[in-house]
Image (cartoon, rainbow, N blue to C red):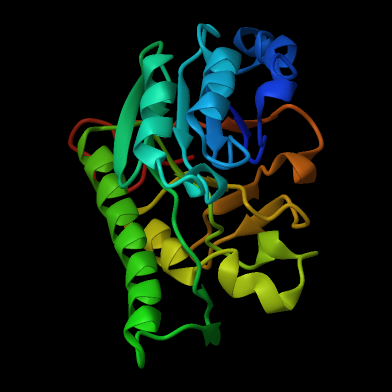
Length: 254
């Protein structure tokens, strides 16, 4: 069993320095990894990123993050990511990373993702160049997430997790105004997750949303935006896939 702690939308700035550190220091007692689902800063400045870095460095568990839209606001996402990575956090965008938890290989594939909406109510790659680029951005993020998950499967990971900021499903947006769903997520992310396979999908962004959802392919989705979970982080327990017996094919029996 792997214990995954996750939170997003902590929106830290200089005045919130130290606010989460006491809770995060308890992580080795209850979790094997911490996932940060974007919007870690308020305006995407390096000063704010340094506050986040101090909160999560040297926690005793690996920390993996994606950036959110707030982390892009100052138009220096690469600098924000660099500050976090200097503290030991692995920041993902269209790629994956493998964590060793004892003898278990935990793969995390991450992307910020983007909007566009969901099946039956989604934007199309048609018309003005700006609209086409909006949808193409969502598609590029989803395609990169799919490839990253597939690569993790090829690396023999026992558990695979999709980490995004934007939501892959509308269920975890319940509570948000319907009018803004297209700006909160995209069905393309869910398609990527279902195509490549994953054991869990984690996202943030929807502050007034709902914690629990599922893709049409049966992958559990969790909205870990801090206003939704109402605490420093939430811990999820994931079973480890049993290896196939020698010479066997197909899923191992329960």
